[in-house]
Image (tube, rainbow, N blue to C red; front, top):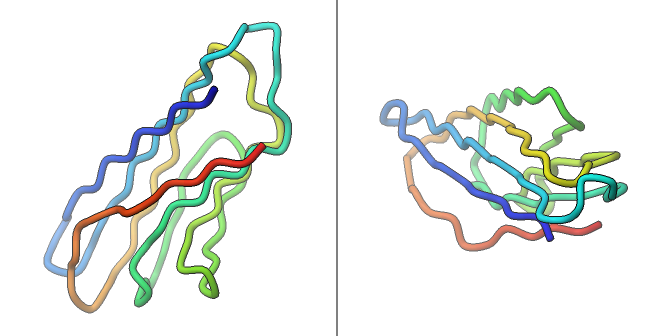
Length: 101
């Protein structure tokens, strides 16, 4: 119902940027409420900054995830979130992306 695409860019030897695009695949008259998208990140994440026009983003250090919460996600729309952060050593990879609504 919701397609999430993650692009990971290595900005420098210790800076990483995640660009997430979430797109709904249901009718434009429908709305998904309280959508949670969990994105795994390195456990030594530092200086995280988040940019999005939709929802709120927070770092959950106990789960080693970023949580993107979208209160209302309308059908046939696409939204973007950008997360930039530092790590002591760069390891590119993503093992899971979990969506709840």
